Length: 186
Image 1 (cartoon, one colour):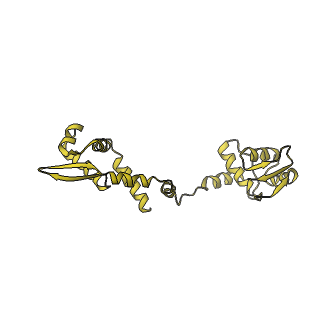
Image 2 (image 1 turned 60 degrees about the vertical axis):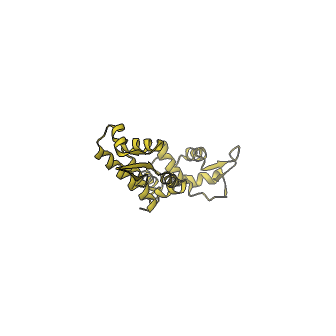
């Protein structure tokens, strides 16, 4: 797991408590002492101390001594850093290493014979889409095909070439010329 992922997990674990969220909300308004937070939230001082410690671990809260009390405040810089963790790039990287084609492989395995032809055309939309992504790989990008050529390729997969052709166009995996003259992969 990358450092960013670990930070996101730690951040969410800390905030996965209603009382800690309330403390963050209160500290967003103004600094509080531990005793004030305990009284406002109706919690024991030791419980609030535990929550503040967890929030401090991820840098959301800091304390400064003021006489006999510690005054806690929300760390705005930590919130800004947390916003950066939620950038599109970081969120995408969280899923790195996940087998995104696993579902398609399972569906293809369930619906194809050893020779690659289809046992049947799936009725469920999600499964049909996986099969269509499998079938369209036999068409070259940028090449135009006559309807006869399309049917020849599709007949390797299933006898109902008209349904497959229609579904490929409907799923925006292939385009066709008005009147059905030529087809091409998109």
